[in-house]
Length: 331
Figure 1 (spheres, rainbow, N blue to C red):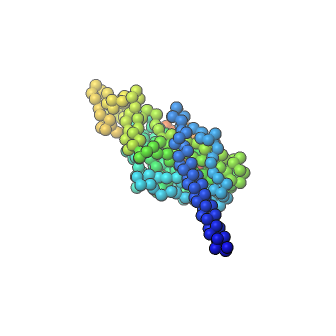
Figure 2: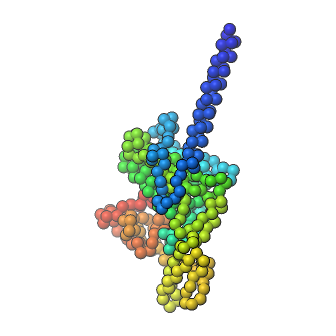
Figure 3: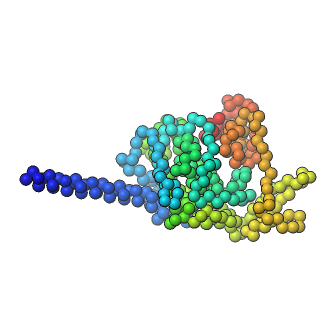
């Protein structure tokens, strides 16, 4: 009788274990494929709400204990899901380090002057899935994907800023999950799904579930390998300075050929003039966003020259002038 009872108990235990494993696999599947099935086509907005903007963290996943976890690269070398419970203790206390040695999948870099709002106007950024300002991760290959400048700045950054501002203000924690979405064996992701949920106030402070599109208006992208070209009907503009200090304006279309002084100039032969930063200044101010930065901040490199102002005023004086400190370099 005891043997029969033991055998029955073992079968029940095995059944329960199988049920738990099955539920876990279903949860994993739902997190990684839910977005693929329901993402609407890009229609001009950098991001779109998923699941009525409700994050899909389960009760057992939500915690007040800070942690960060980055999935292993898959068999194609692509990033997988990154998840964290972000608190002030995870946020960076040191300056951002170089991430240039990491080459994520789909990295086929090109410049698009007049289409990409950065200087130089590179199409792609090494995008942190969980932003540097949130966990301080630098050259972590499990957290860096190839993303357009548009996705990085217009898509992901506003949500990262929302989370960082909330944590800075309240000292609370935010559950945060980023899932890159790839179609088939493509090396460049279609975009990323970002979910966030503020823990202590049960989502009253931060609560969203969005998909950010990995696109760049005016650029046609092949997601199988990340290669790209000027889209049909799009045009690029170059500002050049001649030897006699005469400024030249050049425009081009999808033919990738440009006309200047009556002769054809191929795009690869054109270089932009670059203005070096004033390294003697203590801070660099962005007159457009009213943020201020240390000169080595990546945002300074990407800032339009017309928006820059160099200052040796004190931090307090600059803030009194109406400028806010950068959340990334924290001057």
